[in-house]
Image (cartoon, rainbow, N blue to C red; front, side, top):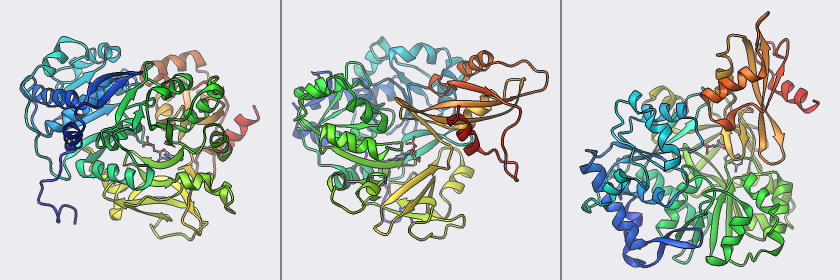
Length: 519
Ligand code: AMP
């Protein structure tokens, strides 16, 4: 039925910027640290020029992909909106990835232009010869980028509801990242759903992008741009608790999106005791599990500002939410259970917990979380098999296991048990295992996460060497450095004679976790 009610002329997401550019033209739109970099009028002007430059200088046509290989920077905001203004699709790439992973995403997406920040540009330029579709890598601060900004401003392109807006690469359990296709409609619904369930936003609001703009924080750009709020990028371009706290007096109505580990780091920031938190409005956390005890500690330390969201790239930022009010309802009989939950389904989605045949299981029973709604991706880019599998029956199969309680609060159990979340970034064991298995001395391998006080989890590899083969931790480490992002590398290697397995020959990671815990 999708599209049946639409005539194909939906609102281009770039319209979210056009309205505040008129209504709040002199308001700060983008800032670095405490200093404004662009007003809304200036931002909108640059967006329409860069869009024209992409078309005229590089010959891009509607539907073409523009990759963004950028650490957090003001230009990320204009590049993202320029892609939409021109009718192109943005492909934001996690800046922490390895060059080989960049190469895979650039190749798979068929991006014709990759806008890069200086720190990443060299690595990407080195890949260009193997990427026939890639025409240019304009570097922020360089002459090619300046040329884009100097183009003659152009009117906004049309967009149909299902047109691709953001190709969100998420690591698949198969090891290769898959591009979740997020349409203009998906992201418009995500934006409205923010106002419905998470928070109000006004022209005096501020969002601080301390988490990567290629992921959650960048998705939250949208509800904030649409209301004329200021986008602040910390000078460090990332997260530092003391720096975040020091920014608060310079802005009003401040919100930020944090991974749970960032919330804990903020609570432990040395300057918290002396910080003025008056202007801190909301910290939305999600992307990984938050322990209820840590949540309580955060509420005590920073006050009534926490809202939790549960989402995934395939249903951006929007599956369930635990409201500010639920965080504060300490007298509720099931308060601690609720803090340990991910809240209730968001306004714009249906959420079910199902068994292996997609039949609903009873409250209290664990099953896979399924989601349906206009925020759910249109499919995986150039991957009809994975699309059919993941969206079978019209429901997004999240791969997350969870259980509803009688009141409709969802508690997640294990991400298909094995996902490792380190410093807020997902690490799929299979991807690391595949790299380690490339070593000729490795017979079998299994990768798990072990608790880490600061990062949440860190990677440990159990390796069964081949008989008489020479393999050591240093060689495996080198292999990983050559092929995957550094944050995915095992921090410890355990060489063992055999992996524990069940009757079906499946490796028992629970046994490995137990053995690691007793180490
Ligand atoms: P990504 O697609 O990179 O955003 O990762 C999404 C995955 O992170 C989900 O499928 C969950 O397994 C996990 N996740 C997201 N939000 C939460 C949350 N609030 N609590 C626990 N796990 C979460």
